[in-house]
Image (cartoon, rainbow, N blue to C red; front, side):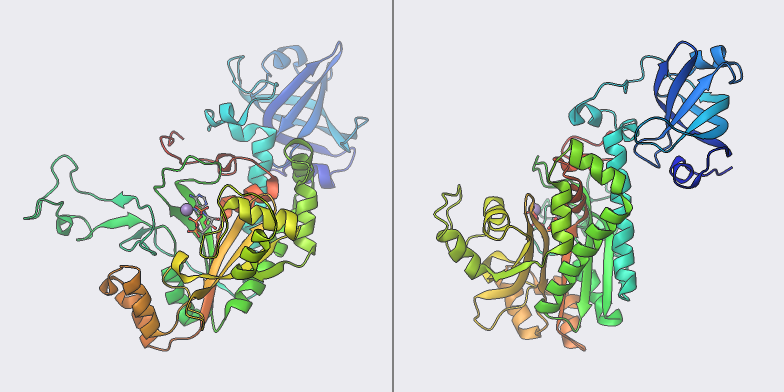
Length: 462
Ligand code: ATP
Ligand code: MN
């Protein structure tokens, strides 16, 4: 049987309504003649306050079975609540216990570190913070689909298993069905992948971009939203081995159109979350990072600055700032540079364009100067790079030269090159790391705490 959520009842219930709620006990406070029991079903941060007393069936007996972590159904009457911060409470007539939880339940009332909570991947979503994170994560996903849907983009599903490594730079997970103890060997004593499942090496995808380009050449505007994998052994607060990526790709679009879309996209998602997750966002601002609301407001309402890479380098050089990584034309901007630009120079998000070709992927469109490519990074205060994108090279001869220069085999990209042989058009797109976005919106410091089941080096328990 489905019942209204606690959120729905708190929003639209009336005093005097008889209702049933179900959820897990967060706290129980026993007074002399009655008890307060806070029940949460995951639909809201605060749950609902249940008041049980002698008029509740089997009061004494049932109260003993109700402890933090237990699952219950409560039927009773809604009443105006005298307590601060809640409109309604529930006067219990019957309390039914589905499953008890004894005092070994690890989430007793005191606050736990996020690190400790990661060891409880099966229970941590029942805490206030992780609950708020996953509600906001859901709202972000809804906002993303709605944004693209309103603009007529097709959501396309790109493969998880792939034979290409996209840029030739990725850290790939190999997928094989060979017997690793006795792999077949070639005459040269290397593993004979011709005998493997796909007849050649296969990997987990690091990006859906190349396939998204195929689909954009048929449907004009498309986007992917799916899992990607990187076997990078970087134990940082911003890297996962399995993360979700959003990759729009647009035919008949140049870098300017790409920037416009990226800016509209971020504004839309932030506004959506501010509108739909008010309670959770207030919680983050209070408990996690007191700049969260101001930042979200700035993203939603301020125009992004736009400068070229060359201008960015000049700005950084004349800043007089001493950076850990010295700045000169040709370097890849580091997080410290990106943050300095966003936080100190522009004090708002900015888009940096036209990076040196040498530090960017082969598929980015070569500018007329022959030195830079039509790339763009969206940089934000506190997090640095949040989006990376480009106009793609649509000219066959130049693309072939760039593939050669990157030391990649042309024949592996035969179908990618074919797109430039048959009806090629200017096109552009970008990639957004979904967890980085959720981190950015919530202010959560560690990326492991914005995905329900994080995969990082030596961590795959849940
Ligand atoms: P970084 O320099 O931070 O490792 P990248 O240059 O490898 O990023 P891209 O290859 O451009 O990133 O991937 C597109 C987006 O995916 C990035 O802008 C970022 O938001 C996200 N991203 C990249 N790697 C990871 C990861 N390991 N975990 C989570 N998100 C990631
Ligand atoms: Mn990386």
